[in-house]
Amino acid sequence: MDKQWTPNTAADGVEQALKILEGKWKLVILFHLFGGKLLRFSELEKAIPAITQKMLIQQLRQMEIDGVVRRIVHHQVPPKVEYGLTDWGQALCPALDAILKWADLRDGQSKNDA
Image 1 (cartoon, rainbow, N blue to C red):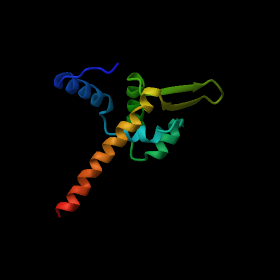
Image 2: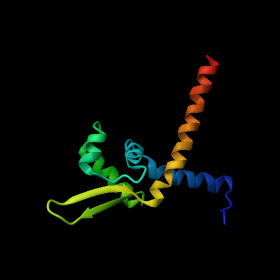
Image 3: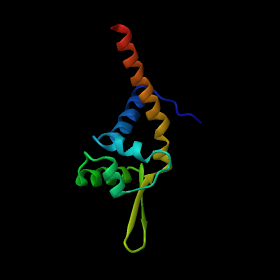
Image 4: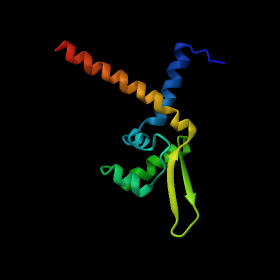
């Protein structure tokens, strides 16, 4: 059953979703993990060289708390920890793809206006 939205509840829902995604690096991290990829912390560091280790830890922890990212600990020596998206996190892919297409419309419109 589809939820019935009012302008106020829709605005509140979008605001809550954007709070989960806010942060300079969260979207970049998400795009590296889309498609079921599991990456170790060091692989994410290499993939996003401009991010500090402290910021990467903070962003991953927050996304884990929010239920977007899962942390998988393999009990071995040396310890191995991987990060991947939860099903809910992976479900963001079509939404972010739609936002990219929407943003691209503006770029096309700007070229047409010139």
